[in-house]
Amino acid sequence: MRIIVANDYDQLSSRASDIIASQLILKPNSVLGLATGSTPIGTYAKLIGMFQDGKIDFADVIAFNLDEYYGLAAQDHRSYAFFMATHFFNHINIPRERTYIPNGLAPDIEEECYQYEAKIRQAGGIDLQLLGIGHNGHIGFNEPDVKFEALTHLVHLDEDTIHANARFFASLDEVPRLAISMGIKTIMHARKILLLASGKEKAATIAGMVHGKITPELPASVLQLHPDVTVVVDKEAGAALGSIR
Ligand code: GLP
Image 1 (cartoon, helix red, strand yellow):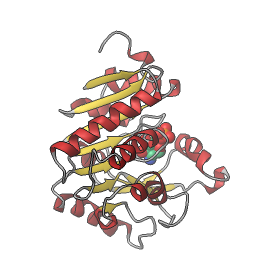
Image 2 (cartoon, helix red, strand yellow):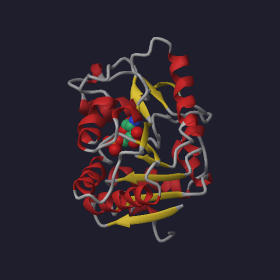
Image 3 (cartoon, helix red, strand yellow):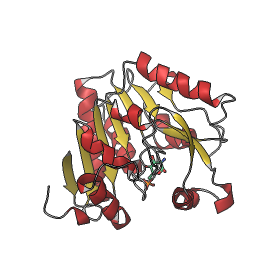
């Protein structure tokens, strides 16, 4: 695991966008795995800036998002499809038919999950997967559990996650209890992984992910087994990493 400690959120976003930009320069038809949450918003903003400056191009990119709330339509302003459109896709030249997000209204969830995996395979697999991390160590929506969930699947969200994500909803009751998420195996199959974390409330989770034991109780700890992971944290999120870097 490669750890980069940025001075602050702005520098974290610069580092992350530079890493993604270099991926696109080296392989313009990259398959990107993308994430939602507050953390990558600055990274997306910087990538949009690089696109506007003519430094990077998304015409040949394919993108797969990690997850989507179950029960929300893509047009719903609280859905991850809406988040991606407003924070990223509407501002770059990625063809919309090359952006994939699980369908939160899929009538047959099993089929939706199966087809999502099939599309990732058909695209040649994910070259670079961007990740945030939940307070409880979740990646995508893979919540702490007694086993690692393998492929794209339906998730029952943890109370902790429901509370953390309530800030995007009018009330706690409105937060969906279910989501569709890539599984740990889907994420681990990405050729490269870039995980971002900001703020002191993530410090213990990041230290556990990097130095703790590998356990489905802290899902992100599985990344210790991946051969090409870059973690970009700001000083606050990296505070418990100590001198071992
Ligand atoms: C949600 C997403 C995760 C994301 C997490 C952290 O639960 N499903 O992919 O990593 O939020 O969000 P934030 O970056 O806002 O802390």
